[in-house]
Length: 288
Length: 284
Image 1 (cartoon, each protein chain N blue to C red):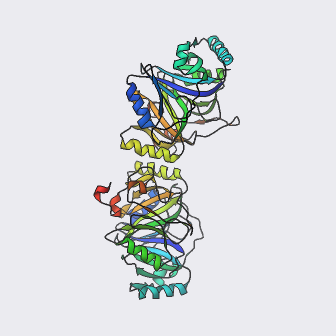
Image 2: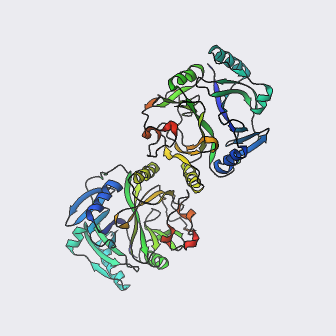
Image 3: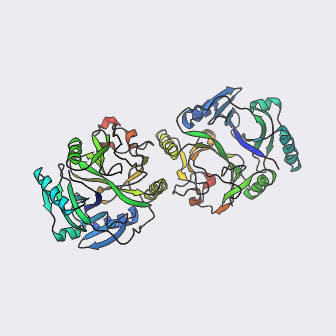
């Protein structure tokens, strides 16, 4: 089993790098930590970076996870190759661009591009927000998968992920005490479906709700409260149709936690009554 | 000084008693506890009633406070007479309608009708909500004033009421540890400006927000958070032009609390950024 210990970054192609950087700083509130060689590195916590944009195909997404040692990286490379997956060991130059000492990249069974990094860089300076959105950290993503059941099996058998809850067949999975690091979304294509930043308190979610409305940023769901994790949330669209989320109060779980099965219904997504677009989960048109 | 021990009720005239009852129960979640002689009594806590709707003029509105005893009532009558306010002692029949053992009625300098009641009825039954709005109780009112400074002086001079904060000229005042029990908002006529029920949590505020949107209940302010009291709130329109409020998490204060002056701006009414569509709160 491959032991993931860190949830590190998203690498995202964008049709307009300037727009992506402007949105990330002025709207989301991230800090632009550096621009070099066509990459823009941004963060919402004290780590080196959480998102890196590059001018390119907006569907070109990579998720960066962390392993503890090079030995584990070698072992991971072998296991993944044995499973018949495409695995590529990055060059030193590629590793430098990913701000780590070494990594492999593979495509999961849905085609998602995943980096397993070793010794990702630490940062000396604390996060300085571009606006007071109350962001405390980059927390989780929605991951598009072609078959949620197969994806759940893959991540729980090949990796140290476990399921915290289900909505329909989609698992919310994690490798540590945070309720979820992945929310699996059935999709006809791979990629990152949404990117979550935690904010300090409910006030921050609500303030951003009005901030977004004032600036005509399109809200995708919320403000609401997830029935599964208890977190108060707001989802909104950025450039390239990427969805970003603020949430606060996500549940912590330990190994005594028993996963629960929620049906695909409005009430499973939001305990307050907001209505998300459920077609993202493969629900029938008639279900809402 | 007249010592108020509780805020008890609002009496509101209505042209459509059935409509008022339906809104109070199905939309607000209050419990209908009695209906007789053209009046309906509803509540959101364990007391006898919080609102009495009666067939009558929509402008006929009264706010009821409780005094400790008949001696206190007699003393209050004298104080108000000396102040030139012509208090009226209610008949036994009027007291029965107000569900208390005795009361006097007077008008404040703006002309708001106020009852001071003694021994308001208790209830043996607990509140059973008409819907799960999370209501914990009737908490405070906004009152209209034609002169905030004059009326603030009136209430603080003659009653055990003190100002806990001001937004522009509008004082938020109380007689106990709850940040505000009456708040005076400047306008050009008398009346109850809004009626507040507390809810248990912010979840209840947000659930009601989506519940109201689904039913096209007009939300006039919020969801938001008051700078002054810290409470999270939602204001909405009811029948007869009355504004109702749910709020949660109102601040408690004690005698060490020093009142603060907030400017009369949108941010003072809501720290989250929502903008009021309520005449007395408009800042532009």
